[in-house]
Length: 506
Image (cartoon, rainbow, N blue to C red; front, side, top):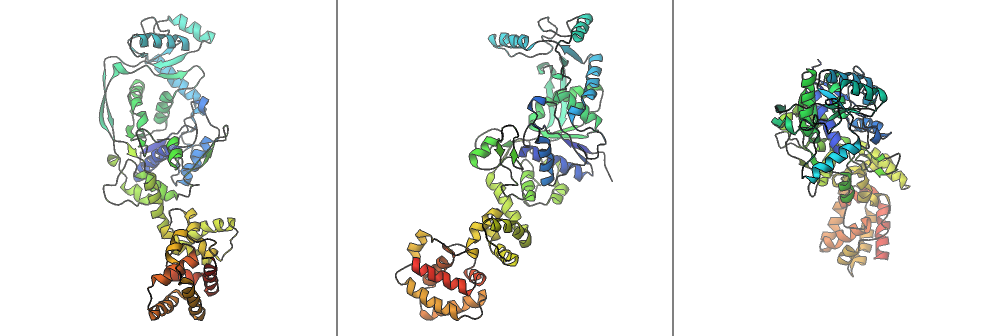
């Protein structure tokens, strides 16, 4: 049964989608699904100067990869469409005119030069220029509050450039409520008269998002903290239209791992991690931005990691499926303070999810890597290798470094460990070991281990004198899973060959 809960994710297609945006989408999605509501995607492309052609599709692809699909949006269940603001210009003009008629907005004809002059004049006096109640009707600014109706009409007919500004109230205390931050009070005297509509026929974000949220019956506006300063204006706009405002919830910022401030692409470039869900190529500059998907992160692990940036379940549990997140998600458990991003924690989540994947699934991801290296192996063999090494891996791309010795003989040997473990008498011991290995009929891991350890015991020598050189011979380093699992996998002939090579080289 559908509820009246309707939320929206409204990104601007000005470039790749930041993980902060994905988290906003995720929290909206979780909230909607928990309450059997509707999750909407709306493209806020009013800023045509910063529009990037391939950004919208990138946003859609990112949400699909993250498994947080929208219920309504561009080309999908367009009940309140269109869902691109650039296709809704006539709607916004209608509502801008309503505000003008009600005396809640006014035309401003000030040129950029005039406004710049006003700013400089204020700066010279140590003040900050604010376009609002204290100067909008004093005659220095050019707007419909001081011009005659005939003059306004003449300017509009002549095609003079203008903006429509909101007329913010004077001497009021605005009391608002945020679902995360509680009660917020604002003195309206400090608010500037924000631009709502431009003479190029495009609204600003402020007007467009209010009108769209109302017409699309949005019940909760869940968005980033950067929009908190705009909340007062948006509440005032609802009042001006005599509309019931939705409930607001402003999510905390995702902060840099080191230092202060909001997480940026530069932080990722500097510290070696992506800040975008998918790889993105700017069509104009050809600049390529790294993506979590291409870096080898699992989508479910990525989402689990994002959920914990600014929210907690109130328990010690950290690993949640998307369905479990829907069940436990609560806006009351979203933090007011910023959430520090940790690249190490992101890797940790990926490693945890690696263990939840089936060996067959991981094998299918590993096989193309082997093919690129010119290695063709039976998938069953590869799957067995995967089962032995996956616990040590963070990414599927780690598999090769962790398992190359299963597919090819070592071409070099770890110098430090070779010096430490390959002694003067080691070659003779290894020659004896070849004879022992060659005689083993049942080459299973358990039997081979039993035979070789019985031989070592009978010779009354330390296990390290044989086991370490043997691992060096087979692997090229003192790493890898259980030694006798390796021996079983590569087979008797290959094992003997590798020991012989080590004797020759070391």
